Length: 271
Image (tube, rainbow, N blue to C red):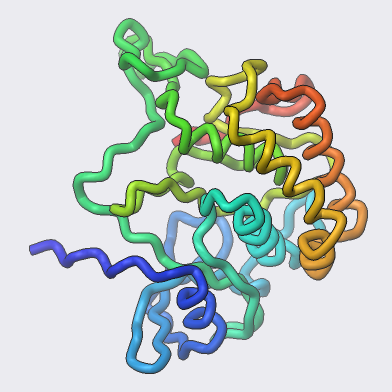
């Protein structure tokens, strides 16, 4: 018998739980490239699961400074919070059983949740889906990597362009019972070079969704104020400045970005 997903928490309550709760590690998520632990967190009788990524468990990357991935996870949440789109689960930086790390609320997906991103037969792309790339399986059958033309995914695509997400796999998109969509795994973000790598290229070069203009305008204002100051606690001043530049470019073009010409456009594996 499948357990019912835990009731959704208001963001304020989730942040309070993550900040002050007692952490008990349950186990390690072995598919993750860095040390990623699932834990229970409890405060005043309330218990939820969370994901704990200690800084000491981060593997060095050639293009990112050591020990900065957890701060980038938190920065992604701060930008999500500022958009009002709720595309990243509540995430904080705090001390834990294995030292300082990113702590993020665990998102339950119902057993009936259907992914809006995947490989589909190239001759039978679902109506309302956008093809991104072509592929063949071991038998030579043609498939397309595609995603739904869904406004929730479009929000995530705009968000990824702002944070310069270098690893938006299909498996990094979650579908909770609330009907919202969450993106997770934002360690390789906010680089000063264009490293956008995503499976959400279906809108390439097309006009941004209508709501993006007001959201990006609000981001630009807040980046010069409270949001910029909060990001500078986790990112370099230059990285925060490049967030401002990306927001301004999006506002100027009013279009979804195109793949970078000198960087792999799709992460591997894509899903």
